[in-house]
Image (cartoon, rainbow, N blue to C red; front, side, top):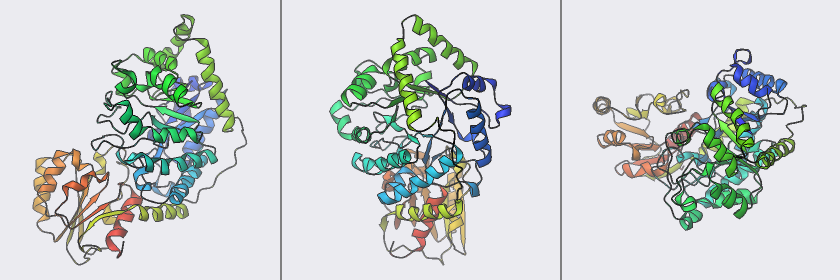
Length: 491
């Protein structure tokens, strides 16, 4: 009933705790970027775990695309560069299907059988710090339109799709990795705005849902408890009212929303009693394993019923059989990285939205151009992507400088002074509508073109710009597509 993470990348050097857990019948492993360094390395690591596991393992990954890609440390020529969910939400459904099939080919080749995707959240809160472009859209209709095909393609490729984060993380203004968010909507408003994607996923027989660590008074009243520990949300609403029969999976229990408010033992007992089947912990250390051992005492002391345990185990084994985890004869997959990346890049071109154009596109190639872009090293999960917009713009007189995601006053002054020597300023924003220091920088620049790398909410800050483009991602494929939109007529 547990999916555990670990530190390290080489099986022979791993901490004994994860080895012992696997050998003792662990349900699954969650892999993060730090565990994945090359195609050969991760395939060998997964094979080593499988060799010693008495029951086939869920090998799980958060491979959403865009900012959340756990393959970021694999060499550029050995991996795909995907689009964010919101970028895909600006293309056609056929493009989403093609994109997901390519993602599945990579996941299958590496040995993963669970993907914590698609995101079913509707991003309704402009200051949401954690969902944003991870959502397909700001309305539930488009979330359904694009997420259901993703779920179906994953299933067709024998990868367990895990929709997240039930009942919806889209209206939060706090990151649940840090503290417990609270969604203040009434039940009527919440159901109208956020639940339809989950209902449609259930209607289309999704086999697993991840539960959020968010507090929803609409469901639990004054009982301040996250959804992941709530019987009212899981047993009463999800299972009974929505008639959901699939696996219920917790979000990572080591997130601030849980660990700042509960002991791991108490939270795990509550989660199991609430109806959670699989519990995720980011790490596998002695304290976690001792906590799992203590659950036996919780059963003996009738804090958890044995029937509740058996119910989850039966569901887990049935899903493992359904997705052929007991089948040891897995055909070898060969990836054509270069050819398939071209398909993703073509899809990316359709994802770019031109919000405003006062006859300023295509850009003037002859002007002395300065690009001002956020430093990827200061943005979570983007620090390994070295691609810049200037790499893809064939201009003879161009310079790109980078600002910290929260620029200092000294940095702002330096950029403003430098900008006065250029004829054409292109500014790349990243959630500047919730970042005052970025706003201070923008106010002091005479911008020609602004490019939105996150949501469209930034557009309100650029009323004086001659052109505004939305790319919904700061990854390589989207930057190529942005460059193409800047250089091409009739986009």
